[in-house]
Length: 412
Image (cartoon, rainbow, N blue to C red; front, side, top):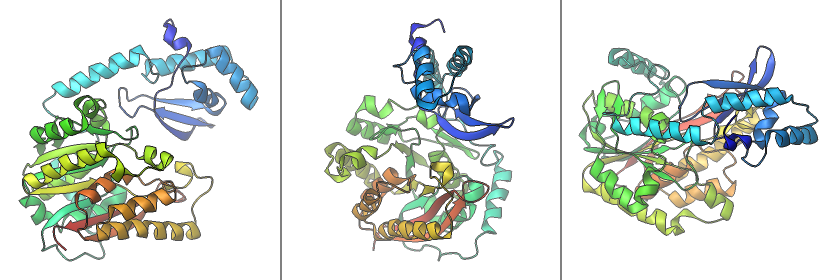
């Protein structure tokens, strides 16, 4: 607490989830950038302090605000200890965090490749074990779409964990294996779960899977960086290190290619909140259009498969809704998701955007921006939905994540 900056603590963007620890309710804080694996539990009577850690309040002002707003009396020492714990875990936006961030970024860039981050958590890291796990997902598939014979231009795949999404992954990737083997490049558009509105984040780092390393096409990345702006394109490059959306897609790519490498172009796409808040539409954004032109040049240069690594809706108490989603709410969700899948099937990015914008992204589509880019790149090309599912997001299944897979054809 000796640094002047921490007299006015500013909380970073963190993952904050409700939790119960030793019988006490509160929230758990976790760093999405993984500068530390430490999680901090904040009891409910102290959690109110987090909303005032905006860099504008001293500790005494935070205590006063909590007392006025919520009628809670927080001991000065408890608040001080919380701020010190947050500081040690790099969860405050201060010089200590920025130094740790810069060191982590340098280590990431100097490594031979981006390491597996979610291996051992979401999937086995040994190829034999992984192959057995993927084969087990086949059993969950009760109906398979016809194996694609016409050339594929793109694949929509989930980025939910494999255990919940296994059947959708399997039905989407296994029948397309021969087509995936034939391409010379994979452009992956992934959700940047930590991305600011309007960001495109690139990396020149190669991506590892349990089968080896997939080389990033750095010339293609350089072309995209020139279109977006070098500084902006790599400003949040460290997001690639911990982000799961691209990693989970590329593990499947490498698996169905039977371990054969292929060039990849990984692109993390930030939120579209700025469009929804202002009423603007992305197709009238000249900067985004220029980036799309550069992406099209990459796609057209050689046989390329475009992959959108996305989930659909996130609803229920786990995502901030006041009550669980029952049968009636699920029926509504399926209707809304069907609008999105119809737009995907028709290759219509404008209908897709409007369907989300009309409800101000009420259903929290965790794939809204990358799916829009995917549809713009493959505009007008028909698609086949391979499978759609509702996945539980809490033990009671009152919170839901919806997912789907799709194949987009090169010609109608």
